[in-house]
Image (cartoon, rainbow over the protein chains, first blue to last red):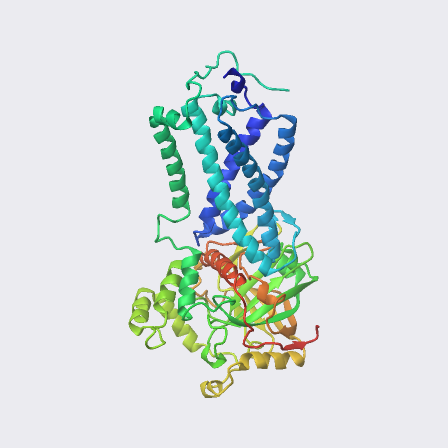
Amino acid sequence: MSASTQRFPLASRILHWGMAVLVLAMLLIGIGMVSTTGPDYYRFLSVHRSIGIAILVLVAIRLINRAINPPPPLPRDLPGWQKALASVSHWLLYGLMIVLPIIGWAMLSAGGYPILVFGVVHLPAILPHDVALFAVLRTLHTVFAVLLFATFLAHLGAALFHGWIRRDGVLESMA
Amino acid sequence: MPYVEDPPAAPVPPEDHPPGESTLALLRRHSGAAVGIAVVLAATVGGFAYVGGFLTPDRLGADKIANALEATGGGAHAGFRRAHAKGICIAGTFTGTAAAARGLSSAGVFDGRPVPVTGRFAEATPDPYAKDPMVGVRSMALRLQPVGGDEWRMAINDTPGLHVSTPEAFYENALASVPDPKTGKPDPAKVAAYLAKHPESAAFLARMKAKPLASGFANDSYNSIDGFLFVAPDGTQRLVRWTMQAEAPFATLTPAARAGRSANYMFEDLLARATTGPLKWRLVATLAQPGDPNRAAEVWPADRPKVDLGELVIDHVESEAMGNCRDINFDPLVLPAGMLPSDDPIPFARSAVYATSFRRRTREHTPPSAVANQSAGTRP
């Protein structure tokens, strides 16, 4: 067990928890903004665009950091199917953290919207103004967001399973 | 490998699962913790469900308002905007009166250089094939695109204010206006009950009755309806409303003459006028004085200071088709730097509902507009 009590490097832990807050905030803001017609709709939408781009930048930094600082190995006695699930869910999280902001950006491009982030930066359109594309991307944005939420739940459940049930040091390695 | 080891003082997690124990057996042995995890996950889902409004069906989301708008039109008209469904595209230029306008707002659209404009004239009806003599509210929607991408969009009406001041009242009014399937008309009892509860709507209807209807789009003037904040270069914020004031002389039709006009006469007249030369409006801001109500159903006193912000010249009119104004969401909260939403609650709801309408209609096949395959004016 002592091998698995290796902690993630500090840079990895900072990126993990910083992005955890941002992703959770994004999911909450995303689901909240489409449910209201009050002033929060506008505020949330502005923040949502900015955090989305921030996540896209951070996930790139994170992948570079991961290449430099690989994560500690999972416990040797973890069943193979759980190791496989861990690997799939982690790459799914990375994939969705990359794809969701890009779809958001592409969707606003195809919808003919200006894309203002951090209150001052106008991002260029990455797709032509095409509402049929907008319609597809807008649907995908929701579908992938739900998938990200489900993956986040699985990640949270698995982390607690390691921390509270297996007590194998995996949760502590990210603490 | 720069792994960081736990400090020696940190407790080492105890070995807690005999080799070969199945995950199921492990969960059973720790059923308390397993229940704890289930509770955490359920609480997380519950929290999201609450934020998303799934636990509060009374919350007024954009889908509810869009559904109500569809119901007022006797059901959704696939492919079309859920409000102001019957329209035509326009294009031209806006030129700001640099000094006067910039004294009010630092927005780039006012810097005096010509700004390309695309837009749309429409009638306030959920029916894209409504008969023009039957519709009493007209609108102008504009997208101003200055160099640098700091866009300004607006959707403005020829009405003296709006019939409601809150999204909630808008929703109630829409529900009360849903046509009875038997008569094809709104239930008078529901309308009366709504108006009794909402004197601001009754006052609006009285103003509408007193206002003569313009004979066409080109000689009509359009009001921002809502209040917005203009931010001057020195940071001063002022509450304003604005009007696109027609330069063409106002004219009206007698009710009898109007009733005799064709189903698309507003659009045919506009196309005919555009062939004779550009159509022009002056953009005029009205400045609120302290205490003026920032509520869309309340009009401000007539003596409020006005500032000429520039001139809109429309030199091209074209039927709605893919790639022109049809595919633009004229979201009133697409504002350039130098303008901000105010505490008028209506624009937030308009922004949310327009986005819902846009999302719905872009997924649908769009049949041709009532006025199709026609254009007039100087541009290709």
